[in-house]
Structure formats: C-alpha cells, structure tokens
Image (cartoon, rainbow over all chains, first blue to last red; front, top):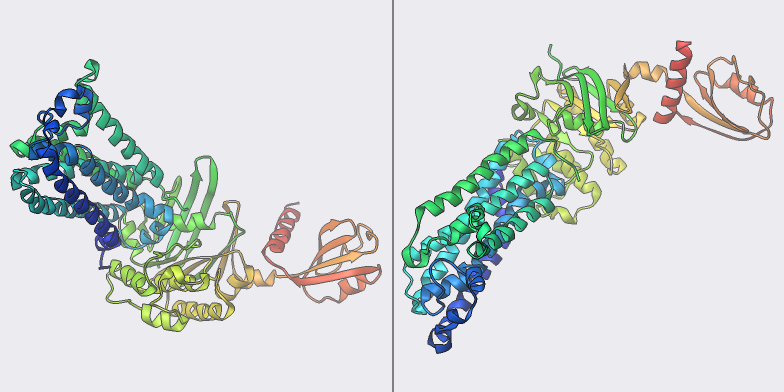
Length: 268
Length: 300
C-alpha cells in the first residue's frame, strides 16, 4: 500500500472514500424511496406548469421538466445538482490536497528530496484522483442499477451509465482545475476556492443563459452546459458532450505539471 | 577527482528579499563540510537550492559533476536530506514512513532503516503524531541515511536531539564519513561543527565570509573575557598586551578576546578594581565579532 506515490495517495483516501460512498448510497436510497410517493401524487403531474422557467432551468438535467417519470425525477432530484456537487466537492478536495495540501503541511519538501521528478509525483497523484473518481462513479452506478428497478423508475442501465459518466467527467474538470491551481500556487485555499467559485458561477451561467439573451453564447464556456445539454437518462450518452468535458479536464491536467515544474516549493 | 558539490555564482532572491547573494564553493568527495552561520544567513536556502526544491536566480550547481538543473531526480538518488524544519506524514508510523521512502528509492523493506532505528532506539510502530520532537528527529535522521547516500545534506541535524542521541548521531556521522560519504552539515553552533567537520564555511547575510579548515579555525580560537570595573579604565589600558584584543566597551564593561596564556591579561586587569569577571570559549557571534574587527584592522 506504500509502494508508490500513487498507492499512498489512494491509501490516504481509504476512510474518506468510504464515507463518500456511504453518502452517495444513502442519498440515492432516499431519493428512490421517495419516488413512488411523488409518482402517485397527482399534484406533481402539473407541478412543472406552475414553476417559472428560471426555476425549472436551475434544476434541469436535459429534456423537459417532468418530475413524475423515473428519468425526470432522477434528473431533477439527483443529477441536476446534488450528485455533481457531491462529486465535484470530492474531486476538488483531492485535487487541492494533491500538491498544495502536501506543500502546506510541509511534507512535500522531503518527498521531492527523493529521486522523484516533480512531474512524476504530480502525475501519480493525478492518476490517483482519476481512479478515485472512477471508483466513486462505480459506486454510484451500482447503487442506481440496484435501486432504480426496485422503484420501477424505468431507466435503463446504459442510461444510468451515461448520466454517471457525464457527472464523473464534470467532476474531473473541477478536480483538475483544483490540482492545477494547487500545483501553480502551492496554496490549498486558492486551489479549493477557485474551482468552487467556478463551479457555482458556471452552473448559474448555464441555468440563466436561456433566460438572459446576452448570456446565450457565454453558455458555451460552462462545463454544466455540456453536462446538461443532452438528455442521458432518456436518450443515452451523447459522446461529444463527454469528450468536450474530458478535453477541458485534460487541458488543466496537462497544464498542472508544467506549472509545477517551474516554480520554487514553499515551506510552511 | 570531481567535487561532490560545486557551486558557482549562486544567487537566490525571493522577490526582492535576499536568500543568498553570490556563493562560490566546492565540497570534495568524502569531505565533512560544515556550513556555519546565524539564523537567517541563507543556510536553508542553500540546502534547498542543492536539492532543486527552489531554483537559483543566477548561478550554477553541480553535484558529482552533473548539472543539477538537468538531472535533478537522478542526482537525488545519491543524496540523503534532513530538513531543518522537519515535517513527516503524521498518520503513518515510522515503519510505514520509512518503508514508503525506501520504496520510492527503489529499496526493499526499510533499507538500512531497521538497523538505524535500533541504533537510535526509535520505536517503529507508534503513529508519528504521537512521537516527541526528539523521536521525530530520529525518523528524519534515519530516512536521510536509509539508502547509504553518497552525499548527506543535513540542515541543523541535532536540533531537538538529547545529548545521548547526539552522541549516537556524531558516531554515525564519523562512520559514514570514514566510509567516504560526503557530508554537508549546516549549524549555527561553532563547537558542533568543529567536532565533526574537516572544513568550515561561514555564511552571513547571504554570502560566504570564509572557508577554512577546522585546524586553521581552531588556531584562531580564543577565549572571550568580559570584565566589569568599578569605573571605566583608561582607553589604552589593554592595548599592546600579547594575545589580547579589545572587542567592545560599554561603560565600565570591557569585552576582550584572549589567545594564548592568560597571565599578561590578568596582571593588566589587576591594576584596576574588577567587580565581575566572566570568561568562556568564543561562540559563533564572538567569532564574527573578532573576525570582522580583525578583517578591518588588517585592511588598514
């Protein structure tokens, strides 16, 4: 378990990963338990008609606003905000910790006194971040695959996979921003604050873009645009959206070692 | 023979604040090199430059004949490092910590770790966060020696060690030096460096003041005498006495440097009323004091 920087990075997250997994499982279980009540209550059928468009856009995850169908319910309740925010919280925490956290705690000095290049160190930590994100996605998908049929939500396994993959790619975007900011600055506060602020800002930008005319084109800059644009729970994966998100993540991932190599390490 | 360390025109500024301002020195392979200076003089900056943790503003560093800016990871395989401000992975035990570092250095198990831990009586299986400062320092020392490095960069290695452990450390250092390891040892304690080093560099405010063998330095050693009189003695009272140099005067208190026999000074002191007399071997600050006085008077 302590044979490489990669292995140690994963080992350090054992407990946190368990808690995040339990949190995701508990959240999905709760949503699924509530679903039959929502489905069978006639007032929810017309709920969408009474909401202003701004509210509906805030909670949209592709397609029209519909909380009664399984796909609609899962999109609005889970995939519009809570699931991506949970995953983003997790990837940003890990990404910020990778370089900046270790640097602020002072252990990076000793680690990089070993015959280990900075790029190698960073890439191993980056790989651990990707693996942990994928593992979290696997937990999410697994619990969905088990719970969704129990509640008769009628969403196919591949559609659940599509939504999960998009959420993972979205989370990786902000995780890689955190990693890159931490690698460039060595400051954990910045490495958390910048991606967190960007996540909120681009989320709001995407939600408001359809209402505010001049925001229309700016929507393209929001990762949430590519996350919510298709309707994965009904129509499956739009591979181009997934690729766009992965490309954004890759840009920051590629910048991180470059930024890290050039600067002085700081001491606490 | 290539030097273990060769530093040319090394300058490091952090923004506008000075780290080191122009260092030139070489450390021969197998040498124990003391790097002496008061806090803030640039010792830690120099060591972190030697590890490529920070980058020079100007100048060149070669370790074992290789340019550090080109092959830093490969060079560090030969280097053991003890930071002055040691931070370890708190949640690991010393055994886990050493195993991790051994693995990253490509060693099996703990490398030399088990033997060294035994020698320092370091308990390997308690979490590091539960260890005392002295025990943490032992973990730091053991990891620096783990892979039998060719070059040790030790930044204030004995800080926080109790005297018995210091002795073990001194023995270990002499052993590895005997086996040909090059040691770069920073300290602000003159006597510590004198005990261990072959040559000493003194750094002050970012530049080297002198590089001398310990014998030469020892030949210049002196006793610091502080005499308090009932009233200030005449200005030239101690001028011209053999081996005596007046360093400083604060009213009735006179600070003198004494080399050689004490008798002439005692007789001279006895001509006035002495209220208090204090003397001890010169420490680094005293040394600086005389060194600079001597430097300026030589120049005149």
